[in-house]
Image (tube, rainbow, N blue to C red):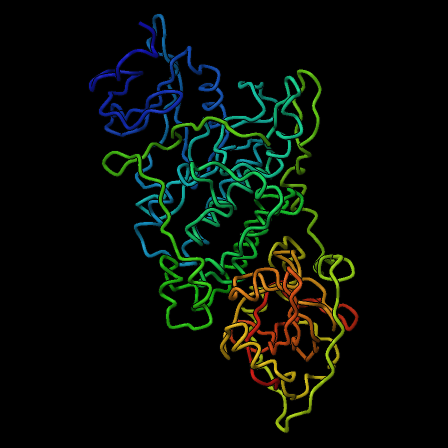
Length: 576
C-alpha cells in the first residue's frame, strides 16, 4: 500500500519525538496533525507522501526557515519519516490558535480600524517575505489567521510559495493558487500563451499585492471586486478590463481614503499598484495615524444600518451588504499555521514565451532599493482627468442665471489629520515626511461660485422626469485614477459612477463649471448626458460627505489644481 492510500495515522504515533494527538485537516498535498512534544508543547505536523510532493515539502521547509516575523507562522523543522524506508516528508510548524480571517470578519462587528489593522499586519508579513525574495502566491482569507491571544493577523501556508532561483515544480500556464485572487497580468499572460508549449507564468510581488487587494475589498464590502459566475467561475473579462465598483457604493461606511488604498491595489498594471509591501505599509500606517469617528462604526451590515441616511437610499437597493464567509476548517479553535487545501489552477491569464521557456512579468526591484527612491510629493498628472485627453466630449458651460442676494458658503478649516489622511497615501521615506510636515499650499483665491438660480425647468426635470428628490446625493469621479490626486480645470466634467435611478445611469457625464476657492474646489453642474445620448437640464452641486465642494490637495499651484478623483454631487434647487 502506498502512502497515498494509507488511512490517517492513529493517535499515539511517534514521529521524530512528537506524539500525534489529532488530525487537523487534509488537503491536496498531505495530512496535518496536532502533535505534542516531549515538554508538552503542541505543534502542527504536515505529512506529505514522497510520491505526492516531496520537492514541494522541502521547498516549504526551506522558505519557512528564511522567514521570521510576528505576523508569520514559523517553521520549526522538517525531516523524513519513518527513518527506515521513509514514505513521508514532514514539516513541523507553529500551531496558531485562531480563526480564518473571513470567519473573524463574519463573527465580529469589525470596523474600519480593525480591517485596516489586519491588512497592515499582512502587509508587514509580506514585506519580510518579499525582502527574502519569496513570493507567497496564494494570499487569501483561508491563509490568514486572526490569532486569539492578541487579535493580530498571521500569514500562513507557503506550500505553493516560490523563491528566486527555485526550480519549477508544476506544469501548465499557472502555478498553484486560487483563481479568484489571480492578478490581471497573470490572466493576460495565460491568454497570450495558451498555445505556447512550455510557457509558465512566474508570479511576482505585484501578484501578492493584488491578491491582498481582493482580500481588502472583500473585508470592506462583503463581496468580490468582480462578481463570480453562477458556478463561482472568474469573469476574466471584468478582471482585465473593468474597474471594480468603488467599495463605498457597496457599503457606504467605507471611508474614501481607505477605499483609495484598496482600489490602488487592484489596478490592472502592477506598476500602477504600490511599488512593494513597504510602500503599502507606509500608506496604511498614514491612514491609521488620522482616523475619524467613522472608523469606529461596524462595517458589517453597513449599508442596511445607514437606513436613516437618505443620501444612500438608492445605493442600498442595488448594493446590499453581504456577510463575508467561506467556511471554517479547524478543530477545537486551533488552525494549522502554514496549511490549507490547495486549489487546482484553472482558467487562462502576459508575454509570449518560447518553447520550454518560463516567462516572468517585469518584477519590481528589491524593497530596499524601492524604499530608497520615494515618489515625488506632487502627484503625477492624470490624462483621464482632462476631457480632451480622455476623448470625451465637452459641452459648453451654461450661461449663469440671475444671482441671489446671499453670499456663497465658506468652508471651515480642516484638521491637519484630515489633510494627511487624504493626501499622503502611497508616499515613503523623505517624501512622506515632507508631506506630513508641510503646510497645505493654497493657490491664490479665484472667483467663488455666485449665488444663482437653477436652469429654467431643471428642478422639475430632476424631480418629475428623473425621479430625484432635493437633497439626494450620489458618488462620482473626475478620472479613472485612484489613490492619488488629479488635476482639474474650470470645464472638467464629472461622471456618475453609481446607480442613480434608471434615467441617470452609471457613467452619466455632468457638465458645468468648477470654481477654485481658498481651500476647496466648488462645482455647479447644469447638464447631464447619459451613455446612450439623452441630455437633461439639472441642478447639481459638487460636494464631499455633505459639505460643499472638495478639498484642494497640497502641491497645487494656480496652473495645476489637484483634488481627489472621487467626490459626490447633490440635488439642489438653487446654487449658493
